[in-house]
Every structure is written in structure tokens, then in C-alpha cells.
Image 1 (tube, one colour):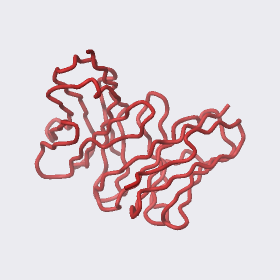
Image 2 (cartoon, rainbow over the protein chains, first blue to last red):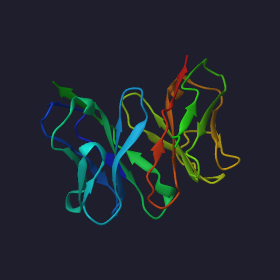
Image 3 (cartoon, each protein chain N blue to C red):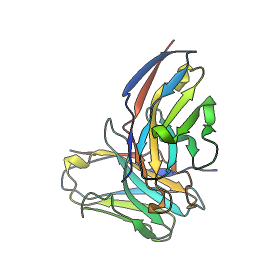
Image 4 (tube, chains in turn brown, orange):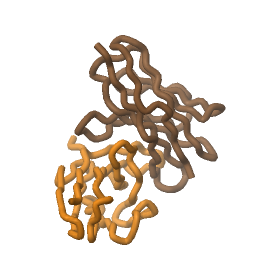
Length: 115
Length: 114
């Protein structure tokens, strides 16, 4: 069974600083990988996804993520954080080929942005 | 176009009561998913529909939970004899049903069992 670890429960960065949120997964082959963002009272919004091909994927709102097979990681990055990026971020893994894309989520990283 | 909608947005019930939670997926999406999110946790998979049939219900915690999607569009999650531990946000998502298709989530229904 697949699993996802987000080691950082809370992260605080200053506005304008760079950001990296860590995600490690466990799966026997190359999974589908996703990052979602959840603002208070809002549903989950898809930031980006990796299925195959180029290991550096670009998403919305200036986010990008890099799939590193050797490290079983899919870290999310942004060069310059805006105050509106404060939210909770979830990494998720899906199993290709079966299971219909059932997603397994990490426990999330809460991002606080200091002005 | 319209996204995934869920009703009600909030539901408060008493222990032992029956509740129904509704999900309207994005038009044309054949796959529909239910997840449950407890406080401080990521969403946990409950059940997945492809069309009208439940393709995977391995996440349903016990037989008090049941979901239907009779016409392949709207889905209802039904919980019998609710318990305080059922309190959570119930999220619905839909996708085009293609392999690896991204899932689009609704705002959720917050269920509180007193």
C-alpha cells in the first residue's frame, strides 16, 4: 500500500522568501503525485501533478515540484512567497494501473507567512 | 463551469441518528470519490464510483456507511446510527475517469455528531 510523509507540520516564512515543502512517498513503482492547497473553509485546490515525463512540473500560483525517484520525494517549491499563500498544503499519491486513482494524502503542512 | 458542490455545508445531528450527505460532481465526470478529513489530518479515502457502480469501497470504516450513485451523476453518502467519532469533514471529488486524471474537490460537508 502506498503512503505519504510530510515531515513538517508547520512552516513559517517571510513574505518574499523562498519556500520548500517536503513530501516523501512509499510505493513500489512510479506513482502519480499531487500537491493540493486548502485555505480555511475552502475545498482542496489542485496545485500541480506528476504522472510521467519531465520530473520538474509547473503548477498554478508560481509553484513547482520536482520528482526524485532516488529519494522517493516530490518537494514543492516557490521562489518568492506571497502573504496569500498562507494555507495548508497536502501531498498525495495515487496508484497507476488500478484502484482508479484512489489518493493517499499526507497529514499536511501548515504554512504561515510573516509580513 | 460549475465545480463540485456538496450539501449541506454543515450538518449537526445527535448520536444514533441517520444522515445523508449529497455530492454533485462536475458535469461529464464519470469518476466520483468520497473522502473523510478529521481535524489535523489529511483526507482519507472512503469510496470510489466509476459511473453508477462502486469500484472500490475499501475505505468505508464499517457497515454503517453506505454510498450510492444511481444515475451516474449525483452521489449520496449515508451514515446510519451516527457516532461521535463520525464527526469530520466529508469531501467529495470528481474526475474525468481517465487513468491518472486529477481529482477536483468540493468544499465539503462538516458533520458534527453530538
